Image 1: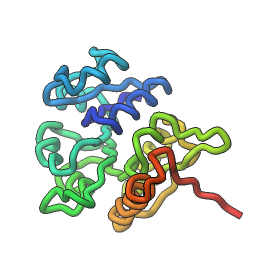
Image 2: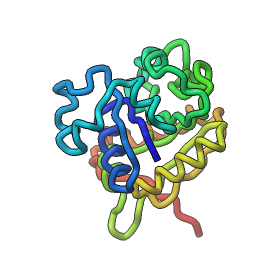
Image 3: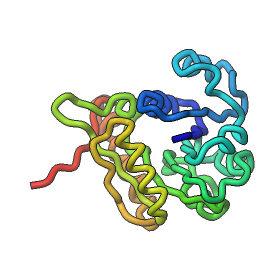
Image 4: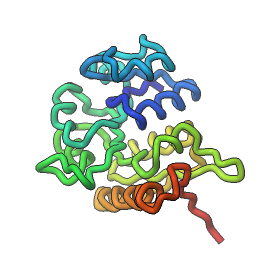
Length: 204
């Protein structure tokens, strides 16, 4: 699969590495492809994987958005035509909302003709680099109205090493999923449990 990643920070960089290991073609779309910010990731995955946003999106069928939420309207304009593509919103807008929208997911649904899903927002990048805790592999979670995008997100979550990708529900559960992300942030940061903690759904 060809995947464009918009946002070369910790989350985008971690998933890029995991998906490349899984055999996917990954392109990182950036306003300044070989800026100082991107040097560290480029040294790991190769400078040839970096290009501008429009070029990355045009060459791929799936697009991961892992940028600051407030940048989404500019990103949508930069991406060009994404109708029919699968867009994965990996952001959290609990602290910074992309006005006038509640979340990046809602902006993408309103402004594009794409299949959109919220996923890869509920844990830290360390767990995306390695969700295997030896005795158990962590789970991932998703929400949204597009079954097509959900099927793709589930496969990519498993390709990144997560055991399962559970469905939180439709678009009306997107904000709940962002609150779920805040539960991880609370435990890891504010309760000082450390970033090497994660979520696993168990059944009796």
